[in-house]
Length: 335
Image (cartoon, rainbow, N blue to C red):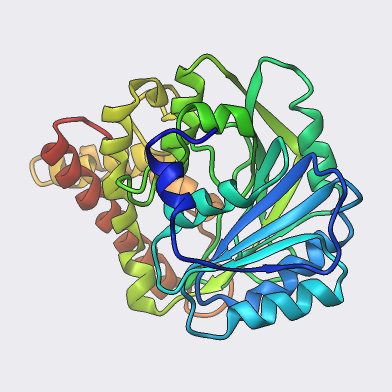
C-alpha cells in the first residue's frame, strides 16, 4: 500500500508502459534500472542480465525522458533476449530518484535489485546478491563494483569501484527488500546526487540491518570525459559534508572519520609541508608520504608522465578546495 508521499507521487506520473511479451507467473525479484540518453550502453546491460533473469525474475527499465530513442531500443532488445518485465517511459526527464521510484511502483518482486545503465552485472550477480537477504533482519545489501575489465582506464575517464562496505549504498549495485523501501517511502527527489546513500541510511535507521556481498559483482563502464569535465569532477565532493551532516553515522566510513580517502590526508599533509617550507625547508619532509604513494594511487606509466602527474596534482587541489569550501558552508568538516 502506497501512502501519501514520494512513491504515491511516482505512481501518478504520466508514463508509457511496454509490457514485454514474456512474463513470469510468479515474480520474487525485480531489477530496476533508470536510463537517460545512454542508448550506446543499454545493449551491454541487457545482455549481462539475460542469463540471470530466470523464471521468477524480471527487469524494469525506466527511460527517464531520453531523446536518443532509448525506449524503442530497450523494447526491441529486451524482447529479442526473451526478458520478462516492462519498459517504462517518462515524457520528460524527472531525475534518478523519481525514475527509480517509478521502477519500484511497477516492480512486482518482493526483492528489488538496483543497477545503472552504465553497468554490466557479472555472471551470478543476481542470485548471489539475493542470498545475502536470506537473513530476515537484513533490509539492504551492497555489492562489489569494479571497473569494466575489458576497458582500459584512460586518464580522462569516470568509473566506480567499491571493494568493501562503504556506507554509500550505491545504486550501481544494491539489493533491497521491497518492504524496507516502502516503509521509508522510497527515494527522496529533494536529495540530489546522494539519493542512494540517503535511502540506505533511512532504511537502517528504520531498524533494518545492512550487509555487504563481495561476491555479487557489477562491472562499471569506463566513461570517457573531456579534460575539463575530468578536472571538474571533484565538484561532486561538495556533497560530502551534506551527507555527514544528515547521517553522522556515515562518518565512520571516512578515513579517521574526517578524510574522504587516506590519500586526501596525505595530500593535505603535503600541502601543509610546502607552505611551512617557506619558513624552514625541512618541513618538505611532510610531502614525502604523498610523493611515495602517488604512483600507487595514480601511476605515471606511458607517455607524458610529468604532464599526467601535474594533472593529478591539479585534480587533488580542486578536490581540496571543493571540500574546504563546502565544509565551511555546511559547518561540517570533511576533507
